[in-house]
Image (cartoon, rainbow, N blue to C red):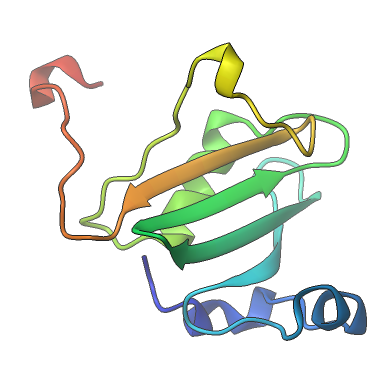
Length: 122
């Protein structure tokens, strides 16, 4: 994951956030307000890097983020040479705190995410 201080122009450091989380974050975590590349509506992005994983959640008020929006956020929060993934876990493991939220994940312990051969990926 990038150093999230590079995204400080988008970081929400309001009193509401600092009261909820204790601070506005740092180079490894934070809450960000990013404008959608599709319609300029605000997307809420929460990023963290702990327990062996880089994690970014992306939510919108009225709908789920699109592929284009998730790709846009991926390029902002992850380096160009990093693979990040969305996971579809078994229904029994679903935990939903927001109905319009999607997530990006990447192991940060040096392991590479397995990928299909490049000719299979459009």
